[in-house]
Image (cartoon, rainbow over all chains, first blue to last red; front, side, top):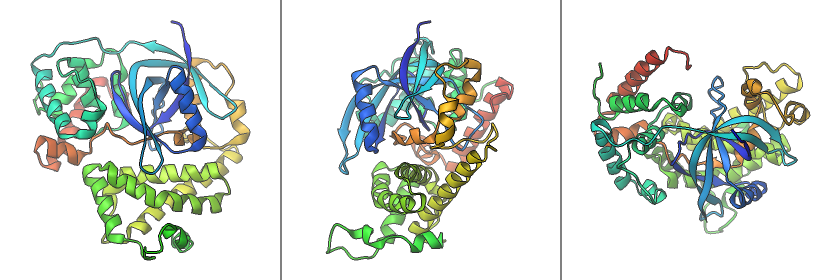
Length: 191
Length: 208
């Protein structure tokens, strides 16, 4: 698998392919980094949580910057879209003390049509989007007819620890994710 | 806490307008924290951030003598404010006291980690520290074996985390989920716990 070298940002957030999130950048010296990421091929978000030291992962989320704006107090806001997950194979450090990794894209869940369960999850998710302007604005393209998209967005949204969410970067974790949501959102008891 | 609090440069709080009183609007701060806790309200967080960030940075810079470290204290303190807002109880003290207590703890943690690092007593399972100038160059060689990656990632300096601050747009609080599903908070909590328990059981408990 060919690798590509990208900047790596450890952040306490979890984002799966097709996920979008907004980040704020408030340190001057890093604005330059973002402009580099914009010109080149984005960067990799590495989920980490300082309160949970046991869960270092080498899977990151490769994101592209899709939008940016300046907030009222002069802080740069960027919206990033996750194009795929990557395996981080090595890390080096540049003169600005920023890290870059050789990463290789890895497959995540396949495309899945809605079934009975995900259809209910889709209805609930679309209601959530319609009630939440931020989410609605963030996602210009919404795929409520795609099972994997619905399940991934729900996994990002539910209040679980990062270390727990990380289970779902595995390629074969779709049905587990679906079952988890089924229990939490739909309260269906599974045998 | 008291020490830091008393050293808060009060002139910074109202540098912009002579019309503003010198008083801090405590009820407003409490209300913002409550909005953050209950609704994950980003606007409220922005207000709290704007209010505290310059103050924390000023204090931390005085204590630590480093702009980078001060930014890190701001980052960590405000991240904790966001995450722990539900623990704030306005009956127990002022919002400023609560935030500066968090800041104090963050600062102590940082100093402790720096000290541990200097003395080379850092064990593998301790999350490492930022700005450890004398070790980073050694640790990050250009190519590392991937089996060592976990250790390497463990040592990513936290200063990199201040690069970008996630607003956590994509995560609901338990309260929000409860409201969305029109269920009591207790039900949501137990559902999360049960569902996770079953998931972990299935995975053989090796994901802790």
